[in-house]
Image 1 (cartoon, each protein chain N blue to C red):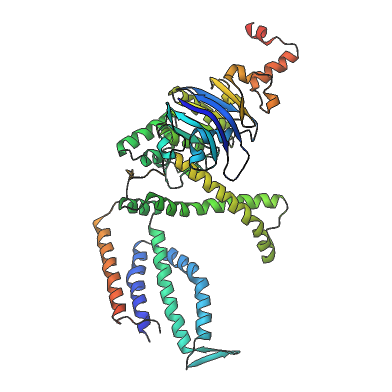
Image 2: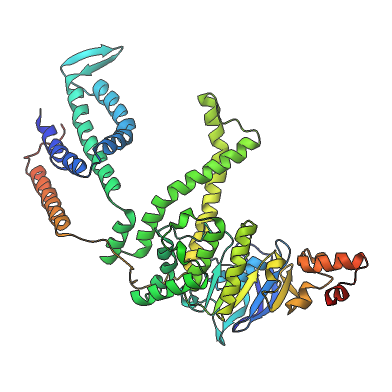
Length: 228
Length: 266
């Protein structure tokens, strides 16, 4: 029964948590990861515990039986979810998106793909800022955006159109402005800088590659069991 | 020299033309102002003059864009980048969004041209120096005032090394201080010998900066001539263009019976 937990826990406790401690980001990482995975985790727990067929019934709520098999399944999914969210969170917290994109571009990736990736990350705060401005304008014209949950939800709807439309307009003008600056020119660019690649980073990278291949092999050969 | 020859244009998806048979010349080192009421076609002329219309935004064009005697109509915009560039109204939308410093932002264009790093750095420094904004080099482009942001946007264009710069209402979203900063920057830019076409509502900015001014009304150029003549033309207000404050003041004084020329002579 514990077999389904070993692989993810090895990755979590042996790789992600020590790395987060070394980067002094454990607290932030846990907060972000829990926030990221909480909505899915709640639904997984409910669906798994109460709907998974099993022989050992722990307790019942109305027509729904909570089974030991369901709890085990939920636990295995949750630990994998935690591994995914902490790994993504650690990546986001420790990686400068520009450095990642420049490095990928240096290794042959199209600058357009890189731009799309970085611009997406950078666009989020701009959209939030614009939504704030539009919300203030709507409130000045009498829209109620405070009070009960229903009132707040009602206040969100009039924001969606203006935020989306202004974002689309901005994207169009931004793409024209970039085109004027030869962004569409084919061929390689000579980058002003690229992130350093220390020997320690190279070692960690190879360890991760070998570890990843090891896990794939262990999984394929049955050394690591699958979720039942 | 940049020329629009008998250019007519309609936007994609529209049957109606917004520019009708326009001839416009921007000579080497010349500074031309473009004035007109809202919806007159100034922005469209800017898009046509830098090749974005129709190459990037589609639409139907007759006539041609000619730069230094070579027809450029329909060429990809990046092929025109070293010859002509366009700056927009909003400094925010001109930011690439991928640069962490003003220096990187300004360097993006030369970098896109595939220039060697040393040349990119040299051009970037030169552009920042021309607009006297070297002190902004280390700042984040997203944390500048609107005026500073517009200067960075213009420096980003200048770093491309174009011989013609087109600016579509560069001060439209700026406060008086921002407008003053951009005005000074345009004078500095003009001093480098770069040809400038500036579409602008604020005729005070064009007065004293431009050698020539063209008036656009309903997609047609209705008047084109020396700035002092055009900006002082009696018909300007009828076309929806406010004359510079210098002209309005002298007219108001003349209306009160004050002989301005004689007063100035005294």
